[in-house]
Image (cartoon, rainbow, N blue to C red; front, side, top):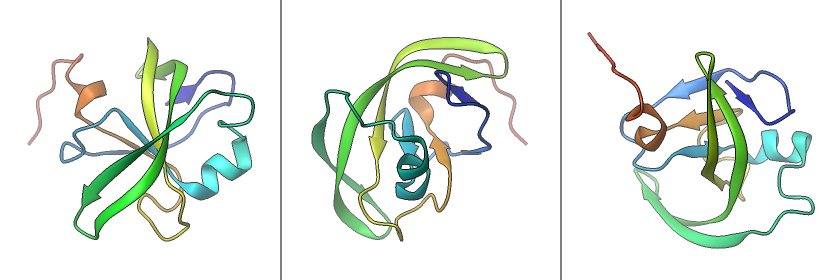
Length: 102
């Protein structure tokens, strides 16, 4: 997966994530996705309960050689929230592909 000009990042395949992209706090801190970008906050719930995340648009996301545009991404605020580290790619991305999962 490539997000904009940030370079390749290994991502977790997650059909249980109903969103598009979930970015770890560590990866966001190293890549500065939110610097100079309009963002909002959102509540997100998972196995660990509900937490507050920042939300912004990733203008370009490449998955399996396919470039997707204007994908929303949630950014973890706490270092311990999954994914640790990296990126979790959810159903809003995968629904654009024909998948055979065994």
